[in-house]
Image (cartoon, rainbow, N blue to C red):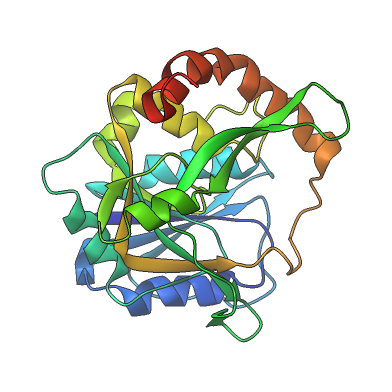
Length: 271
């Protein structure tokens, strides 16, 4: 098995078209498996029946992080991929991503990100795609002088300078779609931590910092793309600032010093 695509799912009506997009865009054939983790619910719609697709039902709602962990435990692929349950993929996305690793086994890789209109299941061409993102600390608008969270921000200067480089290092990603060697997960990521972070957010931040500490890289593959549901469409959970805030602050408490002392100087010099 070459690639295991893990889709954590919680009551999202776009799960089925996402599974179909993975299968229909694939060029890996029988070297692909799709693992759908049903996070404590049974869908009211008919599931995709395909020999490449396996379903794991968690007995209770445990959150996105634990759903991903559970999916990785089932994965048989040399590489693992995570996808949100509302994404569309370019033809050959899976093959393009795994082949881009070459002999590198210390990378996490994402791709060019478009925005998806899930109702029409089409790419929103009117919204610019995202390539490079820089990792920044966002100030808290409600509490002057305080930090709110780590976040990825569009990096337009790097977009312009490095537009002809098709496989390149980047600093942040949304986290909705990524690929890595399973060996890297087992050696470095180990599992996504729910304690402190909470069940949903800052997973990409945790993985990127762990990867940097271990001498790895976050890579951007612009030879292929995925489209993620635009933020204006309804979410399947109502997990707002009051619930997310403790996890944002926890991530800052764990990683801010490392970010300020080592990561920012590495990327931007001593500003």
